[in-house]
Image 1 (cartoon, rainbow, N blue to C red):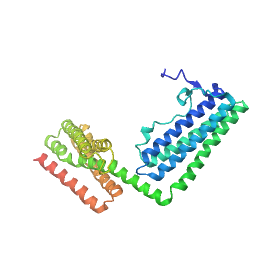
Image 2: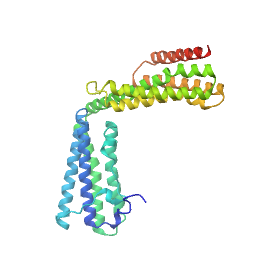
Image 3: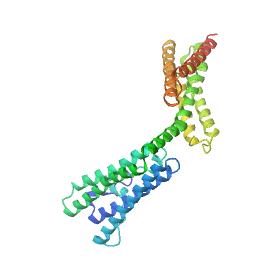
Length: 325
């Protein structure tokens, strides 16, 4: 049995007072989440931060109205009941899982938060025969639907076309600097720098298992080296390139993937079959690098092709010649 599941209350077993208390705690939590998003975005995306400040204030107003209703009907003592206490109640993802994923992801999460709350109250309202509970759940659903209108109004006030365009451009630039650039550098290093040793060993020994082990060692070693080098080279505070841990992770993982791409075919026992597949993989890797450079780094397609494909071909030829000799 999953710990904690057996101690959760079913929503249909909650009293009207407990439903109201649950709504109060949920509104309070959502306001705190919106304020956290606002703080994360404030320096680079002030217009979006203002939207989340306004949405948090709206949640506070709903919470106060719910507290007033609770005081009027049940008194001043509000039962302690939260989302995690109720089986089947919608959950919120931890803020730290969302806030590092970029502006658009935060906007999408906020929209999903409002939708989840509205949908839950609407469904819950259809599962109660008590008129007062049904009215309460319906009012809560309407309030959550109103939050979407509030977000749209705030967006219109704070996020004009030029501001949204600037923020989107900043978010794209940050994504490129933090993830694409180090990941691309790693993919290039892993794909190109491991060509010579892997194919030199392949043609020198024609032993697929030995070639695979050399490729695995070269790929993993290069990945670890590139990851630590990227993370240690720049803390991101002055350059604005983002977290060194994210950049190190992107660079290290992509370096390893780039090398493993043409090492894994040598798990095939037949040498020429493995080598043919490895060469095809190299072809795909190099053109993928060209596409990424053209798509995200604005490198002209012909220049990217010349730099990557020609360079990769020369490294491959060098490895094959050395191994054959």
